[in-house]
Length: 254
Image 1 (cartoon, one colour):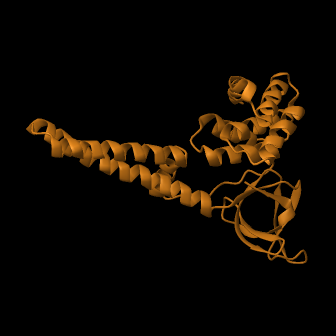
Image 2 (cartoon, one colour; image 1 turned 180 degrees about the horizontal axis):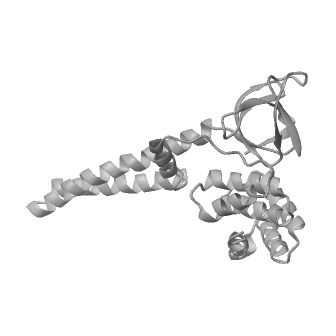
Image 3 (cartoon, one colour; image 1 turned 135 degrees about the horizontal axis):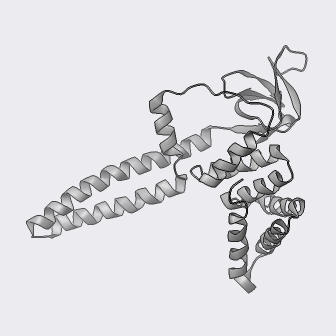
């Protein structure tokens, strides 16, 4: 694992800086960070989980929770929380590194279907940064482009007018690119529903019925895409393209 305590230190320091005005949530995070650094990983996981169950979301919190489970050799829940951290901060190297390590600890090693090179390149660009980061960059570039237009229209110096015009043109182009990345990332996060299998071993069925045909076997920790839902069953697709049905109770949505 890499930088297992880095985000723990961040959360502890934030709680300390808030001082007397700290909320109960800050106190729990501080206590969880101290438990983690002391090696009390089960206690740390319980405390971090309490904050997460309260509705608080951050990549740092989810990453720390994943680390706490990893230290207990609970790789299934480590993967679940690393995936949730990655959803909020897809370009974070530490999250991706620890997630990859955790995935080597589970039984299923599923080879994904190959992507067309341009789709792979575009998706890697979208996942390079979080949606909010792309959006803030786009907003900043748009404001800078407007300032370039002001320089172009207000200046009487030919050189400055040229600088204003071309810089505004270039910045508007990059504004379009960054906002496209933000929109693509947001659309993907809203449309794609993934889950992690939390049942030790389960047979995937051909239809939402226990008596239907057995297709293949999956083990806990495996990530699946949710395609459809009927009653208490999910139609799932795994990385190699295989599809089938699993009971809702066997999965936790990322």
